[in-house]
Image (cartoon, rainbow, N blue to C red; front, side, top):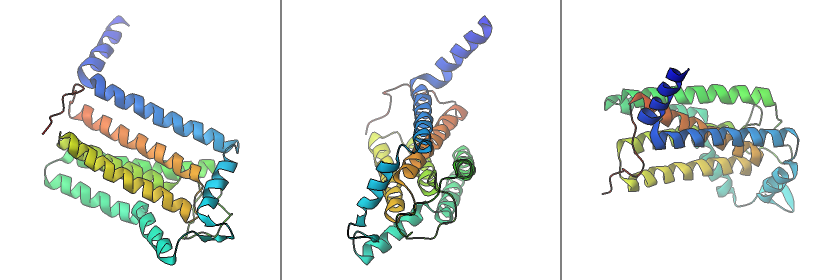
Length: 240
């Protein structure tokens, strides 16, 4: 037992270090956040919150009418497509092919496997939780699966955050890291908001999707770091 414990300590020290340990802690936090949220949803403790936020995007005089003009509604449909299976599949194929072209086969494999597993996870959880879609307002787009968690939110978070993490691992400049993660987060938030605006998801569906999507991206970055034998010490990023 002492030998096993010593080997484990050496692994943590030599391979993971502070940054990877931080990823593990963040990953655990994201999973716990999802589990806590799912418990609240299961107990119907979020009903008032969900209803209030969903109706906030509607005309008070006519809940069937989303706020904003027809152009805003159409723009929201365009935005929500950024989290759809078709567009994300094309995005992942193009990103993976580009990584392979530049010889980054590990990154291509991690990205592809992560998104496939995230999709399987999302489909499974929808069946397990079996939450109905909102019926307070008409749906702005066609939907055919269960509501919890939001697949668009989860898969967009997993995809765009994983790509941002991969890109940031290839360029150590802090400004570049901030740039790619800011872009990713803006797209993810826009997709999640569009799902509530269009009336096809409760806000807690979106929150749950974000937490799990972030968890998959954190796991992808952790796996990639270990696979490449990375053990970067905190504060060592190059500044330019």
